[in-house]
Image 1 (cartoon, rainbow, N blue to C red):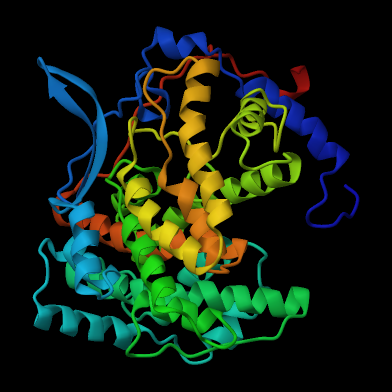
Image 2: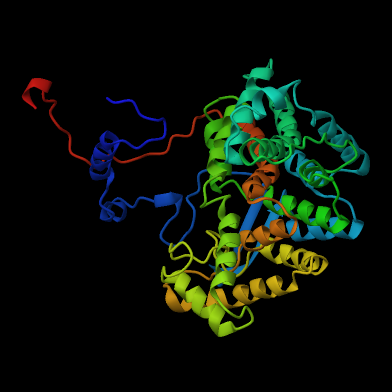
Length: 454
């Protein structure tokens, strides 16, 4: 075999890939014949029940005459409606990610002394091992910050003398450290990449003990470390809305699945990061921003409903943007009439758009929010309603915060590590069995033929 670069797709690989394509294809009719719940969901979109949880609840239906019917969505953390959590935090003018993290981990809202003690603990843990930034983050920086984050998490295993101890106190300690360190690992990884690949100045700001998670993200990211109160508040709300979403989403299910094997915390969280990185999961808000930018470049008048509507139809008909046939930010596996996270986020995004002078862009988003469900219903056969999901507005919010695209999904991870931690602790507390779902073999059994006779 000839010498080639690491990333080159050689003729040999192309030849073998054709064999993969031929052998990897399964007749779609077999899924119906054997009643396989592809994607762990039935044909109506209802998830297969594989576990129990007390951490969060996702509701998108109500019961009428004994039957479930679509309803406005609601999200609950430990029994508390997220709408009430966000409203309570906003009224009291304090940051809520830390409070909500305490709630997810320990099952109750903290008192002021409990919250102060917990926040101080997170702050104490917000320190990387000596020379970690120089020896790990700055070596071979990746263009993808999720890969950088996963590599950093796996490397922290080597710094932990009790890395393989899966007793609850030790796992809680590891989870709290990762919750505290995710902002630094993400932002420092981005700064290193921009410096070594794009020649940008290198900024490594130390976190401030008195700052919240949201404030520290903006502090360590921006060259001048400056931010407005509304910017920090919006980012805090974004973290709260993204930190947990039931046990059935792909990355949280990954947390349960890998935890059930008995492996260490670092391996579990790295696996969850790999899931969240996917464009069908955590990477969706990037697609929304890119789609909107393409729309603004393509159409002439952002205020013309007919022109915007025609672009949306072109998206669905694979004649615009990436030609995937999707209007990104619309629809959700569970929610139908509304995604509560999108509704909550809407008012905060509107407030920031006024502060940033982005009212015209916000008006375009609200027009798309109104038109897209109607157009999708006209163009597609759908079994439930379609509404904007949280990704529809989060990308716009991050762009107004001047967050780089490379950090959109890591911001999701910075939030979701709180939920993953709660679910890992829950899995370890009551489960003794490894998860092992069934797959049915659908090919013929064959007789082995000696090499000389083939």
